[in-house]
Length: 161
Image 1 (cartoon, rainbow, N blue to C red):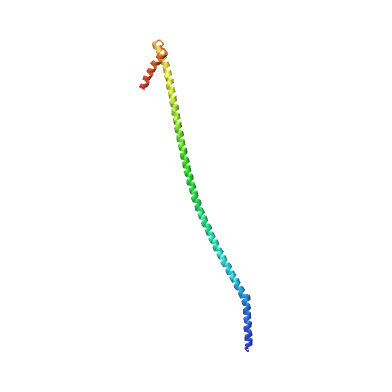
Image 2 (image 1 turned 90 degrees about the vertical axis):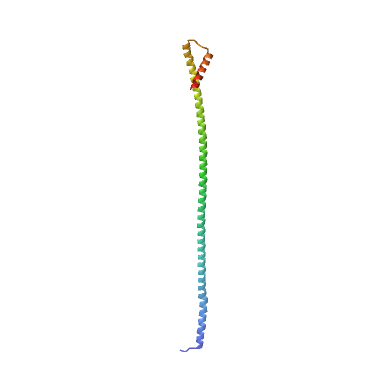
């Protein structure tokens, strides 16, 4: 076993060539694959982070929209309640006015009926008194004298009542 210098030099050159070839053929492509993979992983992480942020924004928008809708529905309910209350009050006022008008009309009608009844009773009373006085007196008085006599008596009766 002899160690010769040219052989060692040849082995060093050979090793350098193989190392250089491996460097260019394997190491650089492997580094390139690793760097591309690292880039893809980083891009995936960025995309995932963006997706998370977008989801958070969407959730925030949903929450805000839900709150806005709740506020708007509360306002609508409040407005509808006020309108219903106003309509109720208007209807009640109209009903009260109509009731007052109807009561006044019925009172007026009742008073007119009472006046007519009193006039009818007075007329019948006049006729009965004339008939009774004719029987008692035995003679007939003229209509004017009877009317004056009866009116005077009726006024006395009405004043005593």
